[in-house]
Length: 252
Image (cartoon, rainbow, N blue to C red; front, side):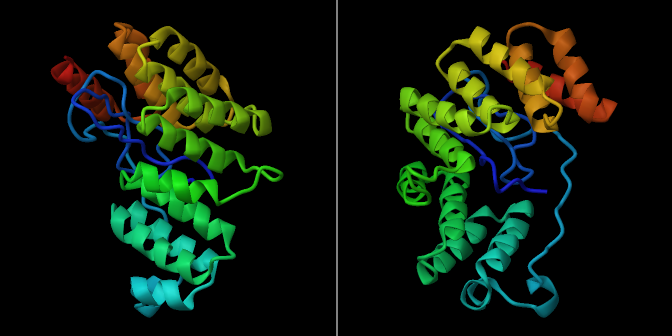
């Protein structure tokens, strides 16, 4: 299932980056962009496709109809199903139309802002997300998404401030901790990144994406044995070997 209450894929661009595992599984993947490996998301994570909870698949509605005729919850579910199938740009378009037609819906605005991150439109995402909640009623998932946008725009200090504010609300959220850890990894502080990611992985609600992100970073620091063990927790032996082999081949 896509975790629309959390963060979205992060593609910070640039000539050198490392893609965390499972980035093509939808918007639940926490982060991308450690400075090591170029290329698209090739790591394997055995992604599952979420069911379409919107009802549109059965009725044959398309994106315009979804935006025009559905409730905000239905539209978000429909967009989520599109994202699960790799149609992130179409999902974002659905949410944009729906947000314009339902300006009072903060849920739609938040989902649209996060979808802009998924499509690499970080500056636009920052603008939308800033209006998706209020200072007197902050939302941890939106704060975390704002951090992702800031990291992608190169403002790491602001990004970490967003993550810390989010952690003040949800201190044991592994998704937010993962984003914070990867923010440090982006600026070359691998030791702090690993420390934070280990905390995230130790939590009972840690996800495979969080564990595989730590595994990837550990590999880049030469801790191959622990990286292999972490990959093996959630992947088949063949998938784990493929991840390690891909990392070896793409090490710069």
